[in-house]
Image 1 (cartoon, rainbow, N blue to C red):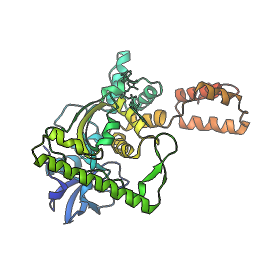
Image 2 (cartoon, rainbow, N blue to C red):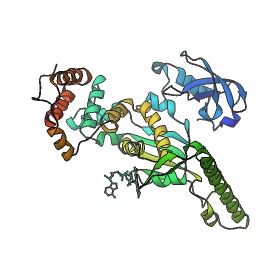
Image 3 (cartoon, rainbow, N blue to C red):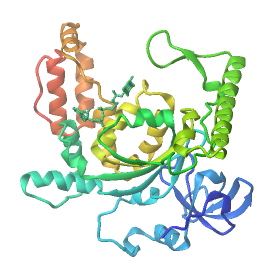
Image 4 (cartoon, rainbow, N blue to C red):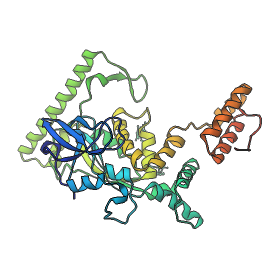
Length: 375
Ligand SMILES: Cc1cc2nc3c(=O)[nH]c(=O)nc-3n(C[C@H](O)[C@H](O)[C@H](O)COP(=O)(O)OP(=O)(O)OC[C@H]3O[C@@H](n4cnc5c(N)ncnc54)[C@H](O)[C@@H]3O)c2cc1C
């Protein structure tokens, strides 16, 4: 069991999981020295860098027994479970990624791995056994063809602390289960999100979103106004509580930037749908920051499924029928460029995927004939 030690109580010699920039998964480190919120840590693996100073909010305490398990080569780790596990997910479990000024995202639990997705798909033809590299090909095929059932076999459970206005957007994703902190049972803290002044921008002319940044003096005044409104509202909340008003009524004065928290459970298929919508540039920056933290973990925990999602959903361009019509009428590309594209496609894609690609080019009128002879 993980001790609920907080960054504030971390001692010298404690083991921590540290999240460092440019490193995909957290690294096990030992605290050498503490100076308020700055921790000098020494990493326990042999990769460089070996020492670093990190902020206390970016580390999670782990008991020595767990640190030793994480450091042992996978083949030598004593396994306390017969369930299939993902190394990336195991490294992230219980680790809070800070988001905004007082929020976080934390993978609490999961069930299922990349291999499990492929195995579930093989059930379609009465087979069950995984076969290494074939899994990647199969998972990419599933994603390309919208065969999403196998991705639903992976379950994920998250602990998220977020401002109420982000929660309002998040909760629109209905294919999930959640349990939120109750303002009827608990007294809410005075944490309220205040955007950094330089990010405060003007209203776009039409519809949702932000336009150009405002002048610095306006940004500072706006940030101060938001902070003051939150402080005043929380003081009114405390006063109502002290008058004996029920918590469920006192909370009515709190603004939508007050932090709440919840446990959120969603399968990997619907999580990718959430990420597609909330990582997009038209999503509000604050929920996008949460989606990026979730994506950081998903990328490590289900790397093959993530790669397929990134290639075929997030990075894909779908063409509507009128667009296809326009492209079909566009002038043909010069011969050499066609040949170049064909050569590149042979390097970048497997035979089946390449055949599909050539089919798309032919449909767009960008190829004279479909070359089905794949190297
Ligand atoms: C940029 C942006 C702006 C938005 N603006 C607004 C806004 O102004 N106001 C607003 O209310 N929402 C807004 N939304 C929320 C949006 O309309 C969706 O509700 C939200 O993104 C969740 O998407 P979803 O319904 O596909 O996901 P989920 O609720 O997770 O559903 C996943 C899929 O399940 C199916 N499904 C789920 N429930 C039903 C159902 N009852 N009937 C039929 N099929 C169902 C659909 O195929 C759906 O795509 C916005 C979202 C984005 C990304």
